[in-house]
Image (cartoon, rainbow, N blue to C red):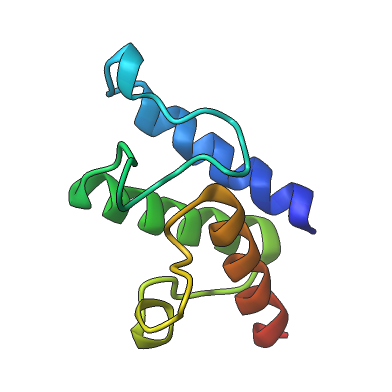
Length: 98
């Protein structure tokens, strides 16, 4: 499941990267920073990432998840800090929705 989730995230990142300068592109690396110190996404790009990942998860896994909720925002390690953290959080939400 993790590979499918990462594929979804990287597809969304590719779309976001198309609108960024070469120096501000997010690499296909699990430790790539998404949001926060040293990251390239601004708040609007983060919202785009969240919405598009939610929509693709709905399509691929036939389940609805909400990434930006109180639980996500109060976690010790933000699910939006790196690609890996986001993928892990998406997997948790998918498993809970079953």
